[in-house]
Picture 1 (cartoon, rainbow, N blue to C red):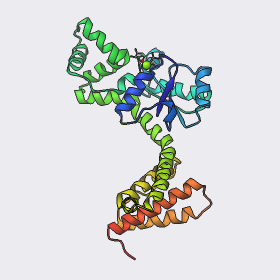
Picture 2: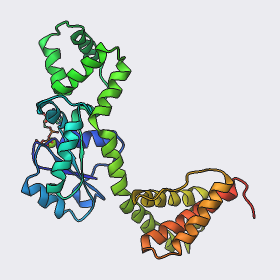
Picture 3: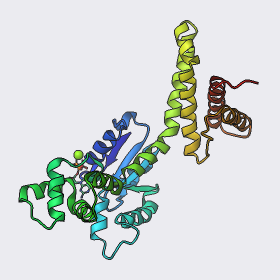
Picture 4: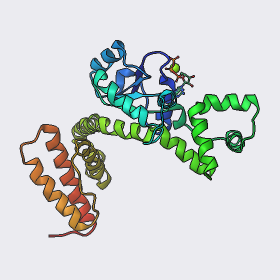
Length: 284
Ligand SMILES: Nc1nc2c(ncn2[C@@H]2O[C@H](COP(=O)(O)OP(=O)(O)OP(=O)(O)O)[C@@H](O)[C@H]2O)c(=O)[nH]1
Ligand SMILES: [Mg+2]
């Protein structure tokens, strides 16, 4: 994916945490999905960037912690509920759904010095200005407040790492990218298969690769991601009966009135399911 957005909105932080989550961050020229980073507002240039992207765009409202800390009142649905509400409001202006993110909290686990400082703060002790300054950079006021409150409730270091990660919203962002990326990723698989099929005519190793169990199952998995991104559930059972049932279901699906990609997905799911079925000893 490519990470886009206005200067200073938090692009570098978002790119860093996405890379750490195992996603490939690349230039706009060869990305499948754009992650457009917003902070606080949707400006006309944001709309323009989203509309002219020419590919799926996920808008991310980062610095969601600043919204949580500046909005007045109590937040009965959790500290990031204000940010989620703001995302829903801004979404109409942006023209796409928006996921909230606290980029700084999605990063690495706490180091020893930060953990000790948070424990001290939670216990009502003071910490030296340099350490406190560093905590402000890595967690900001929101992260510090959430972490110290959790420690006072008895949270362990591992609990606090998990809490901060949960509050960051990174998992929601990664899932949403997975959904948007499913179709372009599958298209890449189809393009590669078409090219390999041409090469396989003169190279037996390539036809073996294409016919290999792992290849057939990988094609099915890419196809499953596409149909699941479209909101269709695929039976994930791994018994012979489940594989056969899935094969039959998708065989009738692909014969129905469906578009080209869906037909191709159906074919890949049928082929993968039958291969898995024969591997677990299924027979007619
Ligand atoms: N509170 C808070 N601060 C953040 C968050 N994400 C980034 N920042 C801070 O915002 C500032 C800018 O973040 P960057 O990620 O460098 O932003 P950028 O868009 O790459 O900026 P430029 O490259 O200068 O255009 C830094 O001081 C970050 O620490 C966040 O989720 N919450
Ligand atoms: Mg930057």
